[in-house]
Amino acid sequence: MSLVSDIAAENYLKTVVKALARSRRERVGTGELSRLLHVTPGTISTMVKRLEKGGYVQRTHRLGCTLTRKGAVFGSAVLRKHRLLESFLSQVLCLEAGVVHKEAEMLEHACSDELIDVIDRYLQYPTRDPHGQPIPRKDTLLDLYVEDDVPGV
Image (cartoon, rainbow, N blue to C red):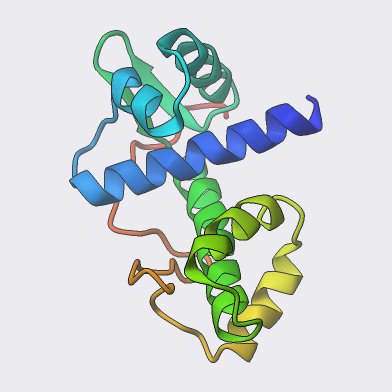
């Protein structure tokens, strides 16, 4: 797996977590993901198949996909990194609101979990990012519907 596809997979899972948390539904459709990620439905289908093969999502033809526990944990961790980085860039480095998202988007894929834990502690465990969105706590899930793990994965 190339670095670019790893980053893409992380972005897909983060987007699925955000979409499910926002909508309080158990599934997200490929059309919705296509709109959110600004890619074609075919590109979404290819990545969803790859994520399903890795045990991160369960896909139902024409109904969309649901996160497995593995996918929810991984996607929530990426979202946690992103939102803590936004908070750090905003509060500590005083970057403007228009810049923090773009910078956090790049940094979230490069920062270790250990660095994110240090940032979390330094910021005194914030619960919301600069945009008012909840920051997932370490090893917890946002309020998501999660399918049981796929057997053997």
